Image 1 (cartoon, rainbow, N blue to C red):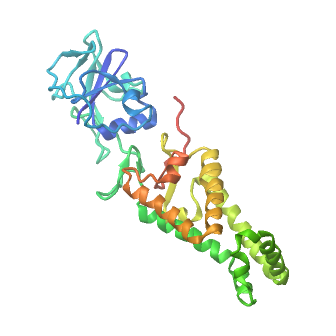
Image 2 (image 1 turned 30 degrees about the vertical axis):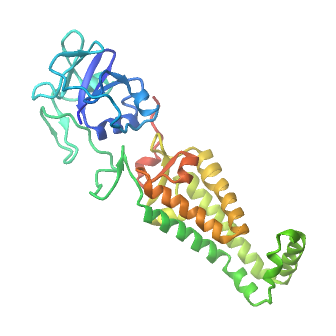
Image 3 (image 1 turned 45 degrees about the vertical axis):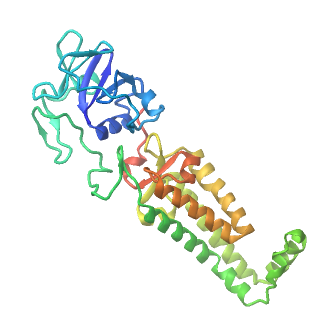
Length: 328
């Protein structure tokens, strides 16, 4: 697909879909710019096609049109389909050629040069392309690339969750070991209508556990929780995600999400939800986790209900994602 862009009645292109999404993410192309490609019957605002999101996913619902001939006019903007002389340049209304760098507000590069996405070499006229960001330049055929990020495989996400759960079990292991040596009557915790009796019984058990064991478990649990919060806040990664090399990023900017999304929505809210589910019945908690990963596996962008709730993506980690998104 060849995509043409226009701003202030000046046209640029053609671009590929990946190039357009990279420029949308970086802010080089704005949602108010116009776009046209085969399948659209007129120039349209990009934000109207993307739902004001910074990722364009063309559908087959656009009205069809024939290939536009040279110098044809659509919405009073000239479209110049690709040829060997004009495909790296656009023209202004007065007929003079305007470089794409100048059109989109970037420093002028050397005349008639471009960057090869695969070799990073500059060479002369051909199809205009952009240098791949570090996050995707080593992408393999199996990787799913969205803009300038690579989506984390579902199995990597499941493994990260399993690692986090294992760390939690290790933290409470001294407490579990102490309880295993006691004659615990678990039937007293199963009667929901007698919660007060169950609470009193749990206090009795805590008093029977050696203070050293209880303190060790508390230090391990709270220490692990604090460490997780630090990594999530600063890097968008739980310890499990650090080990598996994946990260949570914002769906729009593909950078580190806001504190509210990371800690408020994806951490504390989910922690409360799953603790309530597992306290009610472990089976229900595992079912909800399974639903999340099933939704992610069926989504083009691996988005589960966690991600829908926080408007985030889970991607392969790259240091460029920690850089603040440039102001527009």
